[in-house]
Length: 449
Ligand code: IMP
Image 1: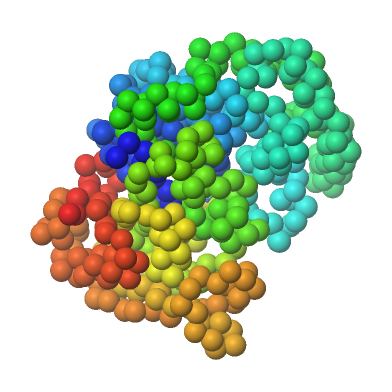
Image 2 (image 1 turned 90 degrees about the horizontal axis):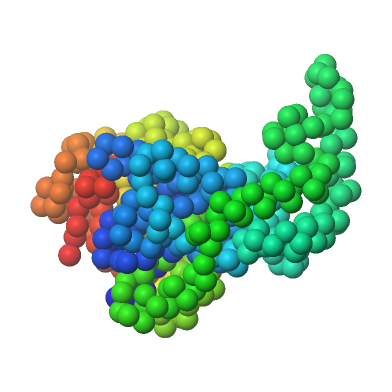
C-alpha cells in the first residue's frame, strides 16, 4: 500500500490529524499537499495537546520524513513560529522538508483576504482571513512568490515588486478605509500603520519586506528540498507515503459548495498535483468523517441543527475552530454528501470520528435524501448551488445510545445502537468503516475489520 491519501469527507475538522498520526505508524513519509494555515490539527498524545496549522501531523514521529508539498501555501511567519514551538517542546524538526516550489502567503495576501471579507459584509464567505484565496490567486496569475525565491534576494525583490504593482490601489483604499473607521470610532486618525492593521503594513516598504523574507529564507534553508523526488524515492523503494489533505471534499474549489469553499483542491486526486506524484502512485484512499457534521463559515448545510440537540453536539464535541476559535455549525450525519465524497475520492476505507459525542443526544438521524423546495426528491448531491441552498434533508432515524463509550476499544464493547448506526452508514455509502474515534486521545479508537 505505498501511496495512501487521507481526505476529509465533509466540510473539514473531521479529525484527520489523529487518523494520520495513527496510520503514520506504517509510513516513512507524510506529505501535506494543499491548503495553508487555514487548517488546524489537534493531536493529543500522552495527555499533551499539539496544535499544527502547517506542519504535517507526522512530525511527532521522529523517524518519519514530514513534507510540506508544492501544493501548500505557506505563511513563513506562521511556519517559523510552529517550528519554534516544536523546538521548545523538545520535538525534533530535523526531518521536516519544504517544497522549493510551494507558494508563500505574503503579508499583503492576509490584508486583502480580510479586506475582501469585510467588503462583502453579510455576504462574506467566512474565510479564515489567513490570506489563502489571494495567495492561490497570485499563484494562478503567475505573480506568486515561491519558497525558492527566499534564497535569492535579487529575484525576490523583482517578484515582490511585480506582485505588489496591481495591488497598490486596493491597499491604498484599504488604508484610507481603516483611517475613516478609526476616526468614526473616535480613535487617532494618523495614516494606518502596521500596528493599526493587525501587524501588516498597508503601504508595504519593499526594502523591509525583502529583508524580512531573506531572513526567513536563511532559517528555512536547511529544510527546503525537491520534495517530489523525495516522495518518488520513498515510493520506488516500496515505502508507504501518506498524503495528508487539509480542509475537505465539500470545501473543494471545484467540487465543493462553491463559492463557499477554500481556494485549493482537498480531494484525493489533487494529492498527485500537490505532491508531484502520478495517479498510479496512489493505492489507498481513506476518508475521514465525523459521526455527525460540522461546518465553519457560510454556505449551504442541509442537515444543520438550530435547536438544543445542535447545541448539545457543539458543547459535547467542543466544536470551536482550532484556527479561528469560531463556533462551528453542527448538524446530523449527511449520507447524501458522504456518498458523494466517497465517489469523488474513490475512497476504500472510512474512519468515523467523535462517535462518543453522540452519546445521550437521543435518537440518531442520518440524511438519506434531500427534497428540493419544489418537492422533488434528490437522491444525489445536487450540482446546482441554488437547489442545494434551498434543499431540505430527509432522515432515517435510528436508536441512540446513552453509554459512555470513551473506553471502548473493540466493536464488542460498543453498544448495539452505536454498532447499528455505523453499519447503517457503511452500507449506505458502500465503504467499510475501519476506524472509529471514541475520544480525543490517539488510543481512543475502535478498529473494525
Ligand atoms: P479560506 O480557506 O480561509 O479561504 O476559507 C474558505 C472557507 O473554508 C471558509 O468557510 C472557512 O471556514 C473554510 N475552511 C478553511 N479551512 C478550514 C478548515 O481547516 N476546516 C474547516 N473549514 C475550513
